[in-house]
Amino acid sequence: MKEKLAILDQLENQTITAEEAERLLQELKKSKEVQPRKGKTIKVYIKSNDGDVVNVQVPVQLAKYVLKGSKHFSKAKLGHTDMDVEAILDLVNQGDIGELVNIESSDGDIVKVYVE
Image (cartoon, rainbow, N blue to C red; front, side, top):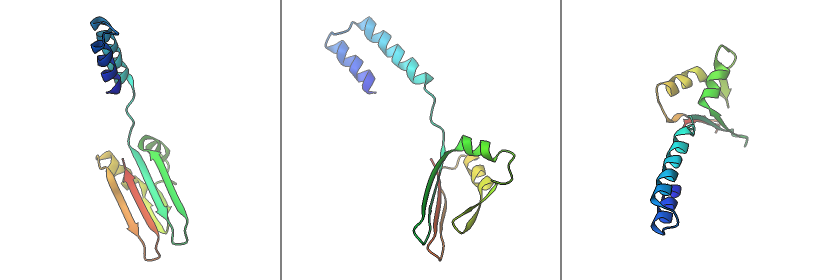
């Protein structure tokens, strides 16, 4: 948006012609269309009762790739909690975003999983 306003300001101040402004606006539009969109990210936050903190962000596509065909990663232990990672990815595939998991154990462990 800033780039577009800058081009229009140049046109208004007559530092560029209408044709140059049109060309620049078209180039700007093309450059925006080519830029890849950022995909979804899975964020895992763990805080143990003894002070350990884990904060991980993984692109969903990478998580799917790692899990594909691997039974070792389909279940994970997050804090003192067993987590079904495939079930979380199923929620992501269904379009769920935001907080998917929020666990606070009686020991004081906290596990949160978000998708953004």
